[in-house]
Image 1 (spheres, rainbow over the protein chains, first blue to last red):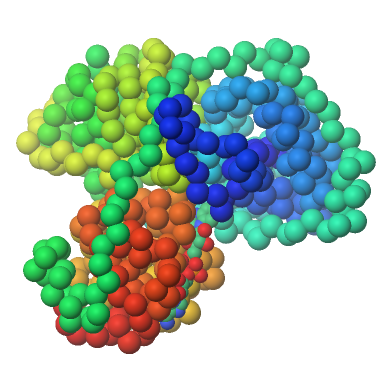
Image 2: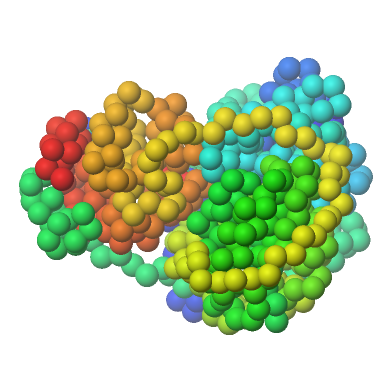
Amino acid sequence: MKVLVAVKRVVDYNVKVRVKADNSGVDLANVKMSMNPFCEIAVEEAVRLKEKGVASEIVVVSIGPTAAQEQLRTALALGADRAVLVESNDELNSLAVAKLLKAVVDKEQPQLVILGKQAIDSDNNQTGQMLGALTGYAQGTFASKVEVAGDKVNVTREIDGGLQTVALSLPAIVTTDLRLNEPRYASLPNIMKAKKKPLETLTPDALGVTTTSTVKTLKVEAPAARSAGIKVKSVAELVEKLKNEAKVI
Amino acid sequence: MTILVIAEHNNAVLAAATLNTVAAAKAIGGDIHVLVAGSGCGAIGEAAAQIEGVAKVLVADDAAYANQLPENVAPLIADLAKNYSHVLAAATTNGKNFLPRVAAQLDVDQISEIIAVESADTFKRPIYAGNAIATVQSSAAIKVITVRATGFDAVNATGGSAAVEQISGAGDAGKSAFVGEELAKSDRPELTAAKIVVSGGRGMQNGDNFKHLYSLADKLGAAVGASRAAVDAGFVPNDMQVGQTGKIVAPQLYIAVGISGAIQHLAGMKDSKVIVAINKDEEAPIFQVADYGLVGDLFEIVPELEKLV
Ligand SMILES: Cc1cc2nc3c(=O)[nH]c(=O)nc-3n(C[C@H](O)[C@H](O)[C@H](O)COP(=O)(O)OP(=O)(O)OC[C@H]3O[C@@H](n4cnc5c(N)ncnc54)[C@H](O)[C@@H]3O)c2cc1C
Protein backbone atom coordinates (compact mmCIF):
# COMPACT_ATOMS: atom_id res chain seq x y z
CA MET A 1 0.00 0.00 0.00
CA LYS A 2 1.11 3.53 -0.71
CA VAL A 3 1.71 5.87 2.22
CA LEU A 4 1.77 9.65 1.87
CA VAL A 5 3.60 11.61 4.55
CA ALA A 6 3.32 15.37 4.93
CA VAL A 7 6.25 17.29 6.44
CA LYS A 8 6.68 20.94 7.35
CA ARG A 9 9.79 23.09 7.52
CA VAL A 10 9.70 24.98 10.82
CA VAL A 11 11.99 26.79 13.21
CA ASP A 12 14.10 24.23 15.10
CA TYR A 13 12.56 23.27 18.44
CA ASN A 14 15.63 24.42 20.35
CA VAL A 15 15.31 28.00 19.11
CA LYS A 16 13.63 30.49 21.40
CA VAL A 17 12.03 32.84 18.90
CA ARG A 18 11.83 36.59 19.32
CA VAL A 19 9.03 38.87 18.24
CA LYS A 20 9.99 41.51 15.66
CA ALA A 21 10.13 45.10 16.88
CA ASP A 22 7.34 46.15 14.48
CA ASN A 23 5.05 43.37 15.82
CA SER A 24 4.58 41.95 12.33
CA GLY A 25 5.70 38.46 13.29
CA VAL A 26 8.62 36.56 14.77
CA ASP A 27 12.18 37.06 13.59
CA LEU A 28 13.23 34.04 11.53
CA ALA A 29 16.28 35.61 9.89
CA ASN A 30 19.32 33.37 10.41
CA VAL A 31 17.62 30.94 12.75
CA LYS A 32 18.02 27.21 12.37
CA MET A 33 15.18 25.52 10.49
CA SER A 34 14.33 21.83 10.74
CA MET A 35 11.65 19.30 10.03
CA ASN A 36 8.76 19.69 12.48
CA PRO A 37 9.38 17.05 15.20
CA PHE A 38 5.91 15.51 14.81
CA CYS A 39 6.57 15.17 11.05
CA GLU A 40 9.81 13.29 11.81
CA ILE A 41 7.69 10.85 13.81
CA ALA A 42 5.33 10.57 10.81
CA VAL A 43 8.21 9.75 8.44
CA GLU A 44 9.60 7.20 10.90
CA GLU A 45 6.21 5.48 11.19
CA ALA A 46 5.91 5.19 7.40
CA VAL A 47 9.43 3.76 7.17
CA ARG A 48 8.60 1.19 9.86
CA LEU A 49 5.45 0.21 7.95
CA LYS A 50 7.61 -0.31 4.88
CA GLU A 51 10.13 -2.36 6.85
CA LYS A 52 7.27 -4.54 8.08
CA GLY A 53 6.14 -5.08 4.49
CA VAL A 54 2.88 -3.19 5.05
CA ALA A 55 3.79 -0.13 2.98
CA SER A 56 5.11 -0.57 -0.54
CA GLU A 57 5.91 3.03 -1.38
CA ILE A 58 6.40 6.17 0.71
CA VAL A 59 5.75 9.53 -0.92
CA VAL A 60 6.69 12.56 1.16
CA VAL A 61 5.12 15.94 0.48
CA SER A 62 5.87 19.40 1.80
CA ILE A 63 4.16 22.68 1.18
CA GLY A 64 6.44 25.64 1.54
CA PRO A 65 9.34 27.60 0.08
CA THR A 66 12.11 26.20 -2.14
CA ALA A 67 14.20 25.66 0.99
CA ALA A 68 11.73 23.01 2.15
CA GLN A 69 13.57 20.73 -0.30
CA GLU A 70 16.04 20.31 2.58
CA GLN A 71 13.39 18.68 4.78
CA LEU A 72 12.19 16.55 1.87
CA ARG A 73 15.77 15.33 1.29
CA THR A 74 15.96 14.48 4.99
CA ALA A 75 12.78 12.42 4.67
CA LEU A 76 14.21 10.70 1.59
CA ALA A 77 17.37 9.92 3.54
CA LEU A 78 15.24 8.41 6.32
CA GLY A 79 13.58 6.05 3.85
CA ALA A 80 10.91 7.81 1.78
CA ASP A 81 10.96 6.81 -1.90
CA ARG A 82 10.06 10.05 -3.61
CA ALA A 83 9.18 13.60 -2.76
CA VAL A 84 6.75 16.28 -3.86
CA LEU A 85 7.20 19.96 -3.06
CA VAL A 86 4.21 22.21 -3.51
CA GLU A 87 6.08 25.45 -3.70
CA SER A 88 4.64 28.55 -2.09
CA ASN A 89 6.29 31.46 -0.35
CA ASP A 90 3.07 32.60 1.24
CA GLU A 91 2.28 31.96 4.87
CA LEU A 92 -0.52 29.48 4.31
CA ASN A 93 -3.21 28.65 6.83
CA SER A 94 -4.08 25.05 7.68
CA LEU A 95 -7.15 24.99 5.45
CA ALA A 96 -5.11 26.03 2.40
CA VAL A 97 -2.49 23.41 3.25
CA ALA A 98 -5.21 20.78 3.64
CA LYS A 99 -6.66 21.73 0.24
CA LEU A 100 -3.24 21.38 -1.39
CA LEU A 101 -2.71 18.03 0.33
CA LYS A 102 -6.16 16.94 -0.88
CA ALA A 103 -5.04 17.69 -4.46
CA VAL A 104 -1.90 15.59 -3.91
CA VAL A 105 -4.01 12.79 -2.39
CA ASP A 106 -6.22 12.85 -5.50
CA LYS A 107 -3.13 12.42 -7.70
CA GLU A 108 -1.33 9.84 -5.58
CA GLN A 109 -4.26 7.83 -4.19
CA PRO A 110 -2.49 6.69 -1.00
CA GLN A 111 -4.15 4.24 1.40
CA LEU A 112 -2.72 6.00 4.43
CA VAL A 113 -1.74 9.63 4.98
CA ILE A 114 0.44 10.34 8.02
CA LEU A 115 0.95 13.88 9.34
CA GLY A 116 2.25 15.41 12.55
CA LYS A 117 -0.47 16.38 15.04
CA GLN A 118 0.75 19.95 15.17
CA ALA A 119 3.49 22.18 13.82
CA ILE A 120 5.55 23.75 16.56
CA ASP A 121 5.44 27.19 14.91
CA SER A 122 1.74 27.90 14.42
CA ASP A 123 0.64 25.33 17.06
CA ASN A 124 -2.65 24.90 15.20
CA ASN A 125 -3.29 21.16 15.34
CA GLN A 126 -5.71 21.27 12.38
CA THR A 127 -4.30 20.10 9.06
CA GLY A 128 -4.80 16.33 9.38
CA GLN A 129 -8.36 16.74 10.59
CA MET A 130 -9.14 19.18 7.77
CA LEU A 131 -7.68 16.78 5.24
CA GLY A 132 -9.98 14.16 6.76
CA ALA A 133 -13.00 16.36 6.05
CA LEU A 134 -11.90 17.23 2.50
CA THR A 135 -11.12 13.63 1.51
CA GLY A 136 -13.97 12.14 3.52
CA TYR A 137 -11.49 9.72 5.09
CA ALA A 138 -11.56 8.66 8.72
CA GLN A 139 -8.94 10.17 11.03
CA GLY A 140 -6.88 8.78 13.88
CA THR A 141 -5.37 11.82 15.56
CA PHE A 142 -2.67 12.00 18.28
CA ALA A 143 -1.61 8.44 17.55
CA SER A 144 0.64 6.45 19.86
CA LYS A 145 0.15 3.14 18.02
CA VAL A 146 -0.79 2.33 14.42
CA GLU A 147 -1.63 -1.20 13.26
CA VAL A 148 -2.80 -1.94 9.74
CA ALA A 149 -4.98 -5.07 9.54
CA GLY A 150 -6.62 -5.90 6.22
CA ASP A 151 -8.74 -3.00 5.01
CA LYS A 152 -8.63 -1.30 8.41
CA VAL A 153 -6.15 0.52 10.56
CA ASN A 154 -6.34 0.44 14.35
CA VAL A 155 -5.10 3.63 15.91
CA THR A 156 -4.44 4.11 19.62
CA ARG A 157 -4.82 7.78 20.49
CA GLU A 158 -3.45 9.87 23.35
CA ILE A 159 -6.52 11.56 24.82
CA ASP A 160 -7.03 13.75 27.88
CA GLY A 161 -8.22 10.85 30.01
CA GLY A 162 -5.69 8.25 28.84
CA LEU A 163 -5.72 6.17 25.66
CA GLN A 164 -8.46 5.40 23.14
CA THR A 165 -8.35 2.89 20.30
CA VAL A 166 -10.39 3.32 17.13
CA ALA A 167 -10.68 1.17 14.00
CA LEU A 168 -10.71 3.16 10.77
CA SER A 169 -11.59 2.02 7.26
CA LEU A 170 -8.79 2.60 4.77
CA PRO A 171 -7.93 4.93 3.20
CA ALA A 172 -7.41 6.89 6.39
CA ILE A 173 -5.52 9.79 7.96
CA VAL A 174 -3.23 9.45 10.98
CA THR A 175 -1.66 12.28 12.96
CA THR A 176 1.26 11.47 15.21
CA ASP A 177 1.81 12.06 18.90
CA LEU A 178 5.14 11.96 20.72
CA ARG A 179 5.01 8.36 21.90
CA LEU A 180 4.33 6.78 18.49
CA ASN A 181 8.01 6.04 17.89
CA GLU A 182 11.50 7.42 18.31
CA PRO A 183 12.74 8.69 14.94
CA ARG A 184 16.08 7.37 13.69
CA TYR A 185 18.93 9.48 12.37
CA ALA A 186 19.80 9.39 8.68
CA SER A 187 23.07 7.59 7.91
CA LEU A 188 25.65 9.22 5.68
CA PRO A 189 25.25 6.68 2.85
CA ASN A 190 21.48 7.20 2.97
CA ILE A 191 21.95 10.97 2.85
CA MET A 192 24.06 10.50 -0.30
CA LYS A 193 21.48 8.14 -1.83
CA ALA A 194 18.66 10.58 -1.05
CA LYS A 195 20.23 13.14 -3.36
CA LYS A 196 19.40 10.90 -6.30
CA LYS A 197 15.81 10.13 -5.33
CA PRO A 198 13.09 11.90 -7.36
CA LEU A 199 11.77 15.25 -6.11
CA GLU A 200 8.92 16.76 -8.07
CA THR A 201 7.94 20.41 -7.73
CA LEU A 202 4.36 21.59 -8.15
CA THR A 203 2.57 24.87 -7.53
CA PRO A 204 -0.83 25.64 -6.01
CA ASP A 205 -1.84 27.02 -9.43
CA ALA A 206 -0.90 23.81 -11.20
CA LEU A 207 -2.98 21.89 -8.65
CA GLY A 208 -5.89 24.28 -9.21
CA VAL A 209 -6.09 25.28 -5.56
CA THR A 210 -6.69 28.82 -4.31
CA THR A 211 -5.02 29.49 -0.99
CA THR A 212 -6.73 32.65 0.17
CA SER A 213 -7.62 32.79 3.84
CA THR A 214 -10.38 34.27 5.96
CA VAL A 215 -8.00 34.89 8.85
CA LYS A 216 -5.38 37.59 9.00
CA THR A 217 -2.78 38.28 11.63
CA LEU A 218 -3.07 41.85 12.89
CA LYS A 219 -0.06 41.75 15.18
CA VAL A 220 2.32 39.48 17.03
CA GLU A 221 3.52 40.42 20.50
CA ALA A 222 5.82 39.01 23.12
CA PRO A 223 3.94 37.36 25.99
CA ALA A 224 3.77 39.10 29.34
CA ALA A 225 7.12 38.37 30.96
CA ARG A 226 7.25 36.62 34.31
CA SER A 227 9.71 38.22 36.59
CA ALA A 228 12.08 35.80 38.26
CA GLY A 229 11.33 35.40 41.94
CA ILE A 230 13.60 34.53 44.81
CA LYS A 231 15.57 31.53 45.94
CA VAL A 232 14.58 30.30 49.37
CA LYS A 233 17.13 28.63 51.62
CA SER A 234 15.07 25.92 53.24
CA VAL A 235 11.86 23.96 53.03
CA ALA A 236 10.65 25.77 56.16
CA GLU A 237 11.18 29.14 54.48
CA LEU A 238 9.37 27.90 51.36
CA VAL A 239 6.35 26.78 53.37
CA GLU A 240 6.31 30.05 55.29
CA LYS A 241 6.31 32.05 52.01
CA LEU A 242 3.61 29.91 50.43
CA LYS A 243 1.42 30.33 53.51
CA ASN A 244 1.97 33.94 54.44
CA GLU A 245 3.25 35.75 51.35
CA ALA A 246 1.68 33.97 48.38
CA LYS A 247 -1.23 32.62 50.46
CA VAL A 248 -1.70 29.65 48.16
CA ILE A 249 -1.63 26.84 50.72
CA MET B 1 -25.47 36.86 16.62
CA THR B 2 -25.94 33.41 18.10
CA ILE B 3 -23.06 31.26 19.26
CA LEU B 4 -22.99 27.48 19.38
CA VAL B 5 -20.84 25.95 22.14
CA ILE B 6 -20.09 22.24 21.90
CA ALA B 7 -20.32 20.63 25.35
CA GLU B 8 -17.32 18.60 26.52
CA HIS B 9 -18.51 15.50 28.37
CA ASN B 10 -18.25 11.72 28.64
CA ASN B 11 -22.01 11.02 28.78
CA ALA B 12 -21.79 10.92 32.58
CA VAL B 13 -20.22 14.25 33.57
CA LEU B 14 -20.22 17.66 31.94
CA ALA B 15 -16.55 18.71 31.91
CA ALA B 16 -15.55 21.97 33.56
CA ALA B 17 -13.90 23.13 30.32
CA THR B 18 -17.42 23.69 28.94
CA LEU B 19 -17.86 26.50 31.49
CA ASN B 20 -14.70 28.23 30.30
CA THR B 21 -15.86 27.87 26.70
CA VAL B 22 -19.21 29.44 27.54
CA ALA B 23 -17.23 32.26 29.19
CA ALA B 24 -15.44 32.86 25.88
CA ALA B 25 -18.80 32.88 24.10
CA LYS B 26 -20.05 35.44 26.62
CA ALA B 27 -17.04 37.63 25.90
CA ILE B 28 -17.92 37.52 22.19
CA GLY B 29 -21.50 38.49 23.00
CA GLY B 30 -24.86 37.27 21.70
CA ASP B 31 -27.18 34.37 22.46
CA ILE B 32 -25.48 31.17 23.53
CA HIS B 33 -26.70 27.71 22.59
CA VAL B 34 -25.01 24.50 23.73
CA LEU B 35 -24.89 21.28 21.75
CA VAL B 36 -24.66 18.04 23.69
CA ALA B 37 -23.82 15.22 21.28
CA GLY B 38 -23.53 11.87 22.97
CA SER B 39 -25.29 8.67 23.88
CA GLY B 40 -27.49 8.36 26.94
CA CYS B 41 -26.53 11.96 27.58
CA GLY B 42 -29.87 13.32 28.82
CA ALA B 43 -28.39 14.28 32.19
CA ILE B 44 -25.65 16.25 30.42
CA GLY B 45 -28.33 18.17 28.53
CA GLU B 46 -30.00 19.03 31.83
CA ALA B 47 -26.70 20.09 33.37
CA ALA B 48 -25.95 22.26 30.33
CA ALA B 49 -29.36 23.93 30.67
CA GLN B 50 -28.35 25.13 34.15
CA ILE B 51 -25.19 26.89 32.96
CA GLU B 52 -25.34 30.62 33.56
CA GLY B 53 -26.01 32.54 30.34
CA VAL B 54 -27.12 29.64 28.14
CA ALA B 55 -30.34 30.28 26.20
CA LYS B 56 -30.92 26.90 24.61
CA VAL B 57 -29.54 23.37 24.71
CA LEU B 58 -29.62 20.98 21.76
CA VAL B 59 -29.29 17.30 22.62
CA ALA B 60 -28.31 14.80 19.91
CA ASP B 61 -28.58 11.44 21.64
CA ASP B 62 -27.37 8.65 19.37
CA ALA B 63 -25.08 5.66 19.86
CA ALA B 64 -22.99 7.03 16.97
CA TYR B 65 -22.03 10.05 19.10
CA ALA B 66 -21.09 8.08 22.22
CA ASN B 67 -17.33 8.46 21.82
CA GLN B 68 -17.22 11.75 19.94
CA LEU B 69 -15.91 10.06 16.81
CA PRO B 70 -15.15 12.99 14.49
CA GLU B 71 -16.43 11.20 11.37
CA ASN B 72 -19.86 11.11 13.01
CA VAL B 73 -19.91 14.26 15.14
CA ALA B 74 -18.38 16.71 12.63
CA PRO B 75 -21.21 16.42 10.05
CA LEU B 76 -23.77 17.00 12.82
CA ILE B 77 -22.00 20.14 14.01
CA ALA B 78 -21.29 21.43 10.49
CA ASP B 79 -24.95 21.10 9.62
CA LEU B 80 -26.05 23.05 12.72
CA ALA B 81 -23.28 25.61 12.30
CA LYS B 82 -25.05 27.19 9.35
CA ASN B 83 -27.47 28.80 11.83
CA TYR B 84 -24.72 30.37 13.92
CA SER B 85 -22.16 33.17 13.76
CA HIS B 86 -19.60 31.29 15.88
CA VAL B 87 -18.96 27.68 16.81
CA LEU B 88 -16.82 27.14 19.91
CA ALA B 89 -15.37 24.04 21.50
CA ALA B 90 -12.88 23.59 24.33
CA ALA B 91 -9.33 22.85 23.15
CA THR B 92 -9.47 19.39 24.67
CA THR B 93 -8.42 16.28 22.76
CA ASN B 94 -12.08 15.98 21.69
CA GLY B 95 -12.47 19.56 20.51
CA LYS B 96 -9.11 19.47 18.75
CA ASN B 97 -10.16 16.25 17.04
CA PHE B 98 -13.55 17.14 15.60
CA LEU B 99 -13.62 20.92 15.25
CA PRO B 100 -11.03 21.35 12.43
CA ARG B 101 -13.03 18.73 10.54
CA VAL B 102 -16.11 20.91 11.01
CA ALA B 103 -14.26 24.01 9.82
CA ALA B 104 -12.99 22.33 6.64
CA GLN B 105 -16.44 20.98 5.94
CA LEU B 106 -17.73 24.56 6.15
CA ASP B 107 -14.79 25.78 4.04
CA VAL B 108 -13.60 28.21 6.73
CA ASP B 109 -10.35 28.49 8.66
CA GLN B 110 -10.31 27.48 12.30
CA ILE B 111 -8.80 29.67 14.98
CA SER B 112 -7.11 27.39 17.51
CA GLU B 113 -6.79 27.83 21.26
CA ILE B 114 -7.80 31.43 21.76
CA ILE B 115 -6.81 32.93 25.10
CA ALA B 116 -8.62 36.26 24.76
CA VAL B 117 -11.51 37.84 22.86
CA GLU B 118 -10.80 41.33 21.51
CA SER B 119 -14.09 41.66 19.62
CA ALA B 120 -16.57 39.40 17.85
CA ASP B 121 -14.08 38.79 15.04
CA THR B 122 -10.68 39.36 16.68
CA PHE B 123 -8.92 37.00 19.06
CA LYS B 124 -5.57 36.39 20.71
CA ARG B 125 -3.81 33.05 20.52
CA PRO B 126 -0.36 31.80 21.50
CA ILE B 127 2.05 30.58 18.81
CA TYR B 128 5.61 29.20 18.98
CA ALA B 129 5.02 27.43 22.29
CA GLY B 130 3.65 30.63 23.78
CA ASN B 131 6.75 32.65 22.94
CA ALA B 132 4.56 34.95 20.90
CA ILE B 133 0.93 35.99 21.08
CA ALA B 134 -0.84 36.59 17.77
CA THR B 135 -3.89 38.80 17.38
CA VAL B 136 -5.93 37.42 14.50
CA GLN B 137 -9.04 38.67 12.74
CA SER B 138 -11.50 36.47 10.92
CA SER B 139 -13.75 37.50 8.04
CA ALA B 140 -15.37 34.06 7.85
CA ALA B 141 -19.17 33.99 7.88
CA ILE B 142 -19.01 31.28 10.55
CA LYS B 143 -16.14 31.60 12.97
CA VAL B 144 -14.92 28.22 14.15
CA ILE B 145 -12.82 28.46 17.29
CA THR B 146 -11.26 26.27 19.96
CA VAL B 147 -10.86 27.84 23.39
CA ARG B 148 -7.98 27.38 25.81
CA ALA B 149 -9.74 26.95 29.15
CA THR B 150 -7.04 28.73 31.17
CA GLY B 151 -7.70 31.96 29.24
CA PHE B 152 -11.25 32.37 30.53
CA ASP B 153 -12.70 32.26 34.04
CA ALA B 154 -15.47 29.69 34.16
CA VAL B 155 -19.07 30.90 34.25
CA ASN B 156 -21.32 29.49 36.98
CA ALA B 157 -22.50 25.94 36.43
CA THR B 158 -25.91 26.90 37.77
CA GLY B 159 -28.29 29.80 37.61
CA GLY B 160 -29.52 29.26 34.05
CA SER B 161 -32.73 27.60 32.92
CA ALA B 162 -32.39 27.03 29.20
CA ALA B 163 -34.90 25.17 27.06
CA VAL B 164 -33.75 21.71 26.02
CA GLU B 165 -34.49 20.53 22.50
CA GLN B 166 -33.87 17.03 21.16
CA ILE B 167 -32.35 16.93 17.70
CA SER B 168 -31.02 14.21 15.45
CA GLY B 169 -28.25 14.02 12.90
CA ALA B 170 -27.08 11.57 10.28
CA GLY B 171 -25.56 9.28 12.94
CA ASP B 172 -22.94 6.74 11.97
CA ALA B 173 -20.89 7.69 8.90
CA GLY B 174 -19.67 4.08 8.73
CA LYS B 175 -15.98 4.97 8.51
CA SER B 176 -14.76 4.46 12.03
CA ALA B 177 -15.53 2.47 15.13
CA PHE B 178 -14.64 2.76 18.78
CA VAL B 179 -12.60 -0.24 19.91
CA GLY B 180 -11.75 0.53 23.52
CA GLU B 181 -10.10 2.86 25.98
CA GLU B 182 -7.75 2.78 28.91
CA LEU B 183 -8.61 5.63 31.18
CA ALA B 184 -6.47 6.74 34.06
CA LYS B 185 -8.27 6.31 37.38
CA SER B 186 -7.51 8.77 40.09
CA ASP B 187 -9.16 10.24 43.14
CA ARG B 188 -7.08 13.36 42.76
CA PRO B 189 -8.46 16.50 41.12
CA GLU B 190 -8.36 16.69 37.33
CA LEU B 191 -5.05 18.17 36.17
CA THR B 192 -6.46 21.08 34.16
CA ALA B 193 -8.98 22.04 36.85
CA ALA B 194 -6.82 21.61 39.99
CA LYS B 195 -5.93 24.59 42.22
CA ILE B 196 -2.54 23.06 42.98
CA VAL B 197 -0.42 20.93 40.64
CA VAL B 198 2.72 19.03 41.62
CA SER B 199 4.72 17.90 38.57
CA GLY B 200 7.71 15.61 38.29
CA GLY B 201 10.34 15.35 35.59
CA ARG B 202 13.26 13.20 34.59
CA GLY B 203 14.83 14.01 37.95
CA MET B 204 12.32 11.63 39.57
CA GLN B 205 14.44 8.77 38.12
CA ASN B 206 11.63 6.22 37.90
CA GLY B 207 7.89 5.70 38.17
CA ASP B 208 8.06 4.33 41.67
CA ASN B 209 9.56 7.56 42.99
CA PHE B 210 6.44 9.42 41.89
CA LYS B 211 4.90 8.07 45.12
CA HIS B 212 6.67 10.96 46.88
CA LEU B 213 4.76 13.40 44.67
CA TYR B 214 1.45 11.56 45.09
CA SER B 215 1.63 11.72 48.87
CA LEU B 216 2.62 15.40 48.79
CA ALA B 217 -0.25 16.04 46.35
CA ASP B 218 -2.74 14.24 48.56
CA LYS B 219 -1.75 16.39 51.50
CA LEU B 220 -2.24 19.53 49.40
CA GLY B 221 -5.36 18.36 47.54
CA ALA B 222 -3.32 18.69 44.36
CA ALA B 223 -3.22 17.01 40.97
CA VAL B 224 -0.01 15.41 39.72
CA GLY B 225 1.53 16.26 36.34
CA ALA B 226 4.76 15.46 34.55
CA SER B 227 7.22 16.60 31.92
CA ARG B 228 7.48 14.92 28.55
CA ALA B 229 10.74 13.29 29.60
CA ALA B 230 8.98 11.57 32.52
CA VAL B 231 6.20 10.34 30.23
CA ASP B 232 8.55 9.21 27.45
CA ALA B 233 10.62 7.29 30.00
CA GLY B 234 7.47 5.47 31.07
CA PHE B 235 7.45 6.82 34.65
CA VAL B 236 3.82 7.96 34.26
CA PRO B 237 1.07 7.82 31.60
CA ASN B 238 0.65 10.30 28.74
CA ASP B 239 -2.40 12.03 30.20
CA MET B 240 -0.13 13.60 32.83
CA GLN B 241 2.07 15.51 30.37
CA VAL B 242 2.03 19.26 30.85
CA GLY B 243 3.31 21.46 28.04
CA GLN B 244 3.09 22.84 24.52
CA THR B 245 1.94 19.51 23.19
CA GLY B 246 0.33 18.14 26.34
CA LYS B 247 -2.04 19.75 28.83
CA ILE B 248 -2.15 23.45 29.58
CA VAL B 249 -2.55 24.25 33.26
CA ALA B 250 -2.76 27.50 35.19
CA PRO B 251 -3.32 26.61 38.84
CA GLN B 252 -2.89 28.87 41.87
CA LEU B 253 0.27 26.94 42.70
CA TYR B 254 2.50 24.85 40.44
CA ILE B 255 5.35 22.91 42.02
CA ALA B 256 7.93 21.68 39.46
CA VAL B 257 10.10 18.91 40.87
CA GLY B 258 13.17 17.70 38.96
CA ILE B 259 12.05 19.54 35.82
CA SER B 260 14.62 21.65 33.94
CA GLY B 261 12.15 24.11 32.38
CA ALA B 262 12.38 23.56 28.62
CA ILE B 263 10.31 26.06 26.59
CA GLN B 264 7.92 23.27 25.65
CA HIS B 265 7.23 22.56 29.31
CA LEU B 266 6.96 26.24 30.26
CA ALA B 267 4.34 26.67 27.50
CA GLY B 268 1.99 24.50 29.53
CA MET B 269 2.38 26.05 32.99
CA LYS B 270 3.85 29.53 32.93
CA ASP B 271 0.46 31.16 33.45
CA SER B 272 0.22 29.56 36.89
CA LYS B 273 -0.24 32.15 39.63
CA VAL B 274 2.64 30.99 41.81
CA ILE B 275 5.43 28.72 40.59
CA VAL B 276 7.77 26.78 42.86
CA ALA B 277 10.83 25.03 41.43
CA ILE B 278 12.77 22.31 43.20
CA ASN B 279 15.93 21.39 41.32
CA LYS B 280 19.50 20.49 42.24
CA ASP B 281 20.91 22.55 39.36
CA GLU B 282 20.84 26.24 40.31
CA GLU B 283 21.26 27.16 36.63
CA ALA B 284 18.12 25.26 35.55
CA PRO B 285 15.93 27.54 33.38
CA ILE B 286 12.87 26.69 35.48
CA PHE B 287 14.23 29.12 38.11
CA GLN B 288 13.76 31.99 35.62
CA VAL B 289 9.99 31.64 35.87
CA ALA B 290 9.76 30.45 39.47
CA ASP B 291 8.48 32.74 42.21
CA TYR B 292 10.18 30.56 44.79
CA GLY B 293 13.14 28.39 43.92
CA LEU B 294 14.76 25.82 46.17
CA VAL B 295 18.09 24.38 45.07
CA GLY B 296 18.76 20.89 46.34
CA ASP B 297 18.07 17.20 46.14
CA LEU B 298 14.40 16.55 45.57
CA PHE B 299 14.61 13.25 47.45
CA GLU B 300 15.41 15.22 50.62
CA ILE B 301 13.22 18.23 49.90
CA VAL B 302 9.94 16.58 48.89
CA PRO B 303 9.52 14.38 52.00
CA GLU B 304 10.36 17.36 54.22
CA LEU B 305 7.89 19.53 52.35
CA GLU B 306 5.22 16.89 52.80
CA LYS B 307 5.85 16.98 56.54
CA LEU B 308 5.68 20.78 56.83
CA VAL B 309 2.60 21.62 54.75
C1 LIG C 1 7.95 18.53 19.60
C2 LIG C 1 8.28 18.57 21.06
C3 LIG C 1 7.24 18.70 21.94
C4 LIG C 1 7.49 18.70 23.30
N1 LIG C 1 6.43 18.86 24.15
C5 LIG C 1 6.67 18.86 25.49
C6 LIG C 1 5.60 19.04 26.43
O1 LIG C 1 4.41 19.18 26.05
N2 LIG C 1 5.90 19.01 27.75
C7 LIG C 1 7.18 18.87 28.22
O2 LIG C 1 7.39 18.83 29.45
N3 LIG C 1 8.21 18.73 27.35
C8 LIG C 1 7.98 18.71 26.01
N4 LIG C 1 9.03 18.54 25.16
C9 LIG C 1 10.33 18.13 25.72
C10 LIG C 1 11.19 19.26 26.24
O3 LIG C 1 11.94 19.82 25.19
C11 LIG C 1 12.18 18.70 27.31
O4 LIG C 1 12.95 17.68 26.72
C12 LIG C 1 11.49 18.12 28.54
O5 LIG C 1 10.53 19.04 29.03
C13 LIG C 1 12.52 17.82 29.60
O6 LIG C 1 11.91 17.20 30.71
P1 LIG C 1 12.58 17.31 32.17
O7 LIG C 1 12.69 18.73 32.54
O8 LIG C 1 11.82 16.39 33.05
O9 LIG C 1 14.00 16.63 31.92
P2 LIG C 1 15.44 17.26 31.95
O10 LIG C 1 15.55 18.39 31.02
O11 LIG C 1 16.38 16.13 31.80
O12 LIG C 1 15.56 17.86 33.41
C14 LIG C 1 15.66 17.09 34.57
C15 LIG C 1 15.94 18.04 35.70
O13 LIG C 1 15.92 17.34 36.91
C16 LIG C 1 16.93 17.87 37.76
N5 LIG C 1 17.27 16.83 38.73
C17 LIG C 1 17.79 15.61 38.49
N6 LIG C 1 17.94 14.91 39.63
C18 LIG C 1 17.51 15.71 40.63
C19 LIG C 1 17.43 15.58 42.04
N7 LIG C 1 17.79 14.44 42.66
N8 LIG C 1 16.94 16.61 42.75
C20 LIG C 1 16.56 17.75 42.16
N9 LIG C 1 16.62 17.94 40.82
C21 LIG C 1 17.09 16.93 40.07
C22 LIG C 1 18.06 18.22 36.83
O14 LIG C 1 18.89 19.20 37.41
C23 LIG C 1 17.30 18.73 35.60
O15 LIG C 1 17.12 20.13 35.63
C24 LIG C 1 8.80 18.57 23.78
C25 LIG C 1 9.85 18.47 22.87
C26 LIG C 1 9.60 18.47 21.52
C27 LIG C 1 10.73 18.35 20.57
